[in-house]
Image (tube, rainbow, N blue to C red; front, side, top):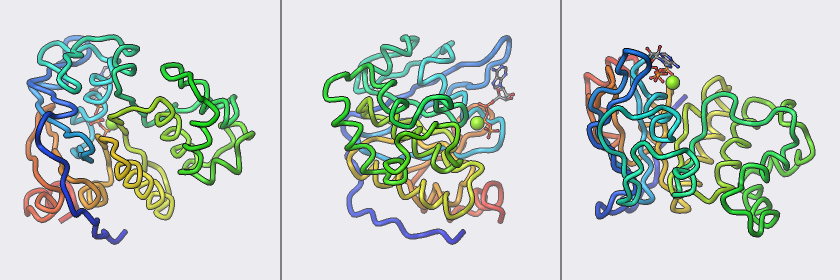
Length: 249
Ligand SMILES: Nc1ncnc2c1ncn2[C@@H]1O[C@H](COP(=O)(O)OP(=O)(O)OP(=O)(O)O)[C@@H](O)[C@H]1O
Ligand SMILES: [Mg+2]
């Protein structure tokens, strides 16, 4: 897929970060998977995380979302410490996580999926759902369809739309383009860009490193549970070592 040129006139400010992760440790059983990981996302910033399989990308998102317990370090959202907080408190404080798989309720309709998760913001539910669906016209046409009958691309759209229903300030996306045909990947990336352009901070984990470096303001390269490189997407994209290791030469 040909990388495209993102139009980025202004970078979001560097003042108070929306998300600040400092020296984070987390893992499973006796294994530490994240080993002193630090990163930040500014308000309205689109930040990509790339890295090899098993580097800990999904573990990072799960830890930020409160599904894996941090063993050390600090996570702050808008300056408030949420290290070790419940998922409920984390969502209520403005962070929403879209897992790679099992991210919709297959037996419920599209509309039910949209309205069921928005418990943190019950007011004006239908109006909000209509606004969200405007971003994803394909969903509008399939409101009554069971989510289990959607195509892979439509399902990813629905999962993102569900996240938007809680009106988060920071969205964590785990490989939204995985398993999709190139045309659908493009559609997903376009939506990610548009959601970000509306002011939402996004932390995007992607296997499509080339595309996500073209899309993001900044990126982190993860290896062995740590940040190995960071910088503007275009700088990492042109770095010979990053190219060799992650972009296929
Ligand atoms: N629930 C779990 N229990 C034990 N080990 C796990 C669990 N989930 C992940 N791991 C291990 O943690 C390491 C990091 O996994 P993680 O899913 O975070 O990697 P990733 O960077 O998202 O990889 P991928 O690109 O393949 O999605 C791997 O070695 C994996 O086997
Ligand atoms: Mg993963």
